[in-house]
Image 1 (cartoon, one colour):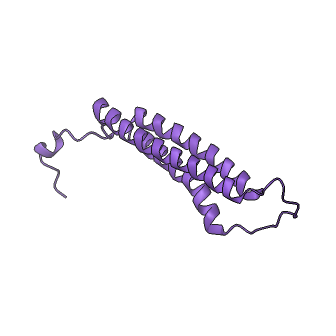
Image 2: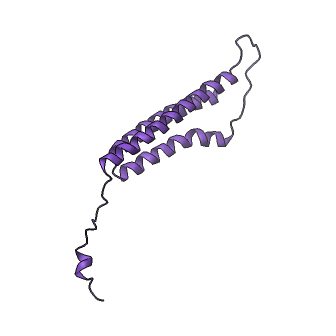
Image 3: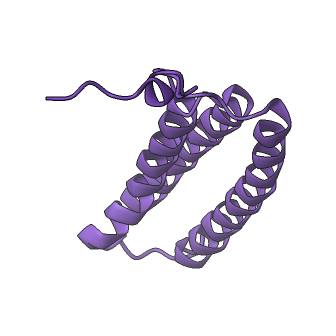
Length: 123
C-alpha cells in the first residue's frame, strides 16, 4: 500500500476536537438561558394551575378519590430532566463550559420541578 503524500501528513487536522470560541459558547449559553427560563416559568405556572384545579374544597366532606396517572404523564414529567441532563452532557463533551454550566443548572431546575409535579400527581 502506498504511503500518504507529504501534503496529507502536513495537514493541520488535530487529533483532538477543537473547542468552539468563547464568544460562541457564551452566545449559545445566553440563548439557552432565555429558552430554559421560559420553560421553567411555564412549567411552574402549569404546576400551580393544575394543582389549584385539582385541589378539593376545604368544605368538601367527601373522601378523596384515587385516580390513576397515565404513563405518558410520568414520561413527560421525568423525561424533561433526562433530556436536560443529556443536553448538559453533550455541551460538556463539545467543550463548551459556559453552556454546560447553564444546562446543568437547567437540569437541576427540571429535577426540582419533576419532584413537585410528582408530589402533586400522587396527592
